[in-house]
Structure formats: structure tokens, C-alpha cells
View 1: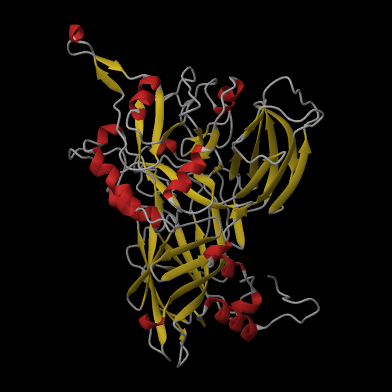
View 2 (view 1 turned 120 degrees about the vertical axis):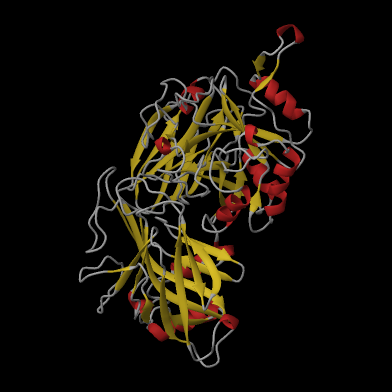
Length: 587
């Protein structure tokens, strides 16, 4: 939908737009910011604003994540006879506050004292839900500085790495409110350590006709999710660590296990999640895996039972189970009696054999394979179990040596994803955080845990093409390699080869047939270019010139039907956020 709903019709004005929203949302639409009541530690902007829509009366308030006191403002008055829900229209902004990576956290939003939703800094459109409340944010303006440099966006936003501005709708039940009276909305920051990240509230008068508010309707409709063929696209983080252990020791990450699950579902806004504590943190596997069952809610928030097998000898692999009943395998085993006191490393085949004995379907996922501190050997690979490889996380990209963003960990030059592809290995690609800061889906942790990992891009997401949002469907999509990777933004990526989906393979093509790759991509920001990678070599680069969507068809001009060939796609946005499709194989 755009400014002109019908061909030849006049542009709709504020009351008509308000009526449209009210009808589609079954909610009264009320201006969400009438006046500031208590600014707390929020900073009021000056005469030069950073926003996204025409505003003749400048007024903006920036609330740092590090603030000790939140801000409270008053809305316009509600109707005397409101509907069952009210949608408050807001003008919001989010930013990093520094060219350096910053710790993440959240802002808790309260309406008349009722906890509504918790939000976080995003550089893309997002909808957060909690119970009966929801907040949709449309990132209509996104600004990104070159790496390690800063932008000046307003009198209060300086030396900025990235910022996003746009309209928002905060939807709450009317029973929280008093008909005919204004409501009070409060934003309270919550972070484990100092951070320069911020949330901005602008005056939103006359925003309905003067801004593109229509994307908010789609964000608030769950049925409006991206679809690829018969499948819906769901996004998750399948690699994070808590600060909890079963023996009372110090965990590898931060926060309790329950707090990590809560953040993933709340501010993280993930569709699916897997907590992957190291095996040394787990002494009671049944209790540990039961947490995934306890937090799993098919149709809303899927949780996979999982752990990280942390071998210092052969590399790190995450293990994901289709259901409860899995096993935690240690990276070493006791030596024979003749070698009393000695320990032997558990090889990958021994890991797979031990997991298979449980009878519970599982997959294993190598990650950060070229990181010098935790390299993964490609001498062990079994396509029955290593169904996927994690191409990206807070460690940076593992696609090829020298890729960007790199992270700052030292790397080997022959252990990346393309090196494994050259060996003829067949696996899908996902990304996830490997977060240690207690913020699944939003890992940025300098000053907290593993500060060497973090960089300016996102923390990584896995995207699956699944029929439904259930544990079985998500696991099956991962096992089928019907999935792709992003650096953290929900980029929509559809790649097929002669009708085959990502992760599929064909023995041969009909005689005289060439592989034809088709892609459709919708970015969260302008697209810079698309790379087509055949047999670990870039064979075509398509410039996108900042367009937010790309459609392209490419026929392989040098196809050799007598050899095996693999094809995948890398999409790069102008803000350097990226997506990788899982490969498709012929031969």
C-alpha cells in the first residue's frame, strides 16, 4: 500500500488513514506523544533534528541505554468509547552511539504501569510482541557510517556508527487505559554495563499523512511473513551461551539460562532459538534439555535442545536434537587402564556414533572453522550429520580468508567455508551469534565477555524455510539444508536452480539443459551487489545500486555435466549486512 490506495483517487488524509488502521487493527489510533512528563536522564535535542518525517515543531528526546532514570511521556486523550485495543502512534529512532561496537541491552516499555514490551536497538524494521501488547517499528530511514568511522546526524547524535528512524505503533488492550483520558508511557533502560546505544522519541504530530506508515500494518500481521513457495521464512539464533552451570561454577557467557531464553523471545524477537552451553557447563543433561521443552511454544517461539561440543583437538561443533532425549558428549574420554590418569580426545566419528546411539535425530554444525584459537579440521566430515556450517557469527565471516567483516580473531587461511566446498563437501549455510553476553539475537559484548569477537555488523541469524513454526518443522528445514544465513538483519532471500530449492541436489540435468539460477531478494536496506559463487569461485557479480529488492536470472555459460557443481549466492547491502544462501548441487 502507498499514498494512493486506488488508481486515480486523491491521496488519503489523516482521518481516512486513521480509519483504515483502526479497521485493520481493530484498535483506536491515538497520537502517542503529546508532552514529556518526566525526562529522567533523557537528553533533549536542539534545533537540528535527526528524524525521518516532516516536523514543523521540533522536539526530540534521546534516552541512552546507560541512563539510570527512564523517561515518561503523556499521549493524546483516548476516545470516550474506545475499542478493545488502542494503537499509539510514535516516532522512534535507534542508534549505536559510537563507531565502536557497543554492549546491547533493552528498554522496557510500560503503559499506565503495565509492562507492555521490551525493545532493543535495531537497524531494520521489527515487531516485538509480549502477551496482548505489541510494538511495530518501520525503519524508514537508515544511516550507516563506513567501518570504524562516525556520522553526525543531529545536535545530539554525533560520531554515530548507524541509526534507524521511523514510525511505530504500540498496541495495548484498552483495559489498561481510562477512556477519555491520556495514557502515560514509560521507557526504562536496562543494560549490564555502560553503553552508548540510544533510543529516541520525536514529536509525532501529523505523522499519519506525512510519513509512510503503511509498513506498520504488515509488521503487525503475523500472516504477512515472507513466503517462498510453499514455505514461510522464520529467523532464529541457534548459538548462544549462558553464565549458568550445573555445578555452581562460572559459565562461559552471562545471565541465567532462563534469562537467555527470555531475552531471545522478548527483545531478541526471535522465531526460534537454541541455547548451546558448553558440555562443561552441563552436568545434568536431562534438566538442561528440559529447559528447551519448557520454553518451547509451537507457533510462537520454537526452542531446539542443543549443546556445544567444544573439542580443542578437532574444533567446535554445535549439536541440535529433533526432540528430548539427547546426550551430552565430552571432548575427551578416559584412556585404557594401562594408561591410568590419561585422557584421549573424542574424534568426530566417535561423537557421531555416541549421539546416534540415543536414537534421537540430530545434526552437527561446525563453526568459526578458521579461527586460530578454535580451528575446525575438515579432515573429518560426514554429510549425514554435518548438515550445516555456520558461515557467520560475532567472530565475523568464515566464508573465505580476508572476507569482511573479519572480526579481530587471528585466522588460518585454508579452513574456511570455500575451502570445504573445494573438497567437495555438501552442507547448508546458517549464521548465528555465538553470543556470550546474555542477549540472543543481539550479541554485542565489549567489556563483558570475549570482547575480541565483536564488530560493527550484526550477531548473525539463521533463516529457515518451514511449513509451520514448530520444533519438528524447524529441525527438518535445518536438516534438509532448506535454510540460509544473514549477518543479523531479516533479509528475505529466495534462490532456486532449475526449480530446486536451497540445499537440494540433483544427480544430473536432462541432456542439453544448463543450470539456471534464479534469485529474488528483499533487503532491510539498499542492496549493493549480489555474488554468484560456483564451485567456491565468484563467477558473476550483479550491482544493485542501492535498490531494496533484486530479481535476477543467470544461466551457467560454462556448465560441465561430467563433474559435480555447486552454486550459492551472497547478497551484500550498502550497510555491509549480508545474506548467504545454502548451496545447490548438480552432479
